Length: 336
Image (tube, rainbow, N blue to C red; front, side, top):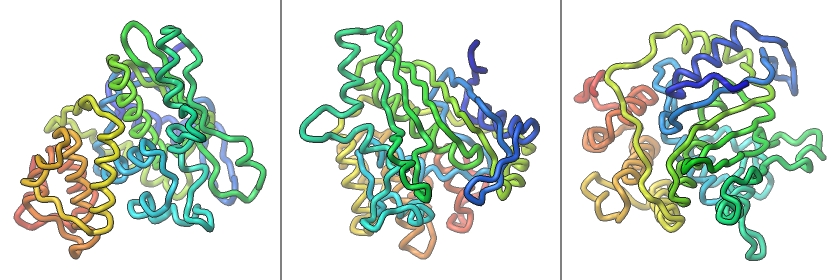
């Protein structure tokens, strides 16, 4: 049996929320968090590039989505970077300002004693066995459970990559997934990693499948889930999915250097400056999103019209709905 297939993650996201809201199998209370839960929930995305949810009631944080994915791709575990975009994560950090369970990057892309990373091994195995079923990127570490009070345990068990007929398919296995908050960011990051990997291997992008042992909605988020389910889906104007260009690890490190300078307010990026970064326009837009957040963080919570209008329409829509108070009065709230 296969999982239901969706054309976009927005459709899958609303379906999952509706299913858990209406057909919860259990009411749980774990570590003080009461939630409604369904077991063994999964879905497939035919086009993993359709990874963004355009839902006014959800107000997706596209800046955090890219920041988290970049944090993983760079193999980082520091709070200094990710905590800037998600201050709530500071409660999970160790005394050394590091995250353990939440930080998937070192387990996927980190190298120890010059050995290949798990991701590098996954990329090289198909060279000798193209139809291999062994390209599994393990994330969960049983040692995380040694301390029952550990607040930062990996929600993701593993990512399974499968090369078939010239396409790279990916399957992510979660032990648990917060359907309102975590699911949106997880799918964004893992489909982006899938697309990056496909580019490295010279493959077309295949399907993406997401499985969760426990898909749940925490009680404080129940009202928000209902609003997302009942509001009309955003279909006009259409926001086409963007295709990642060929991207090297050095490109990622370059993006990381710009991100750090912007995060520290050591640099400003005007739209006219983007072409001088040497990056493809796809990644220039990501830098412009980081510049947008720099302005919100350091310039009295306001985004310049020049920056906002230089964003792709879909990104602009997301910024305007996430931070409506930062939008200049000269920009119509329904601007495409």
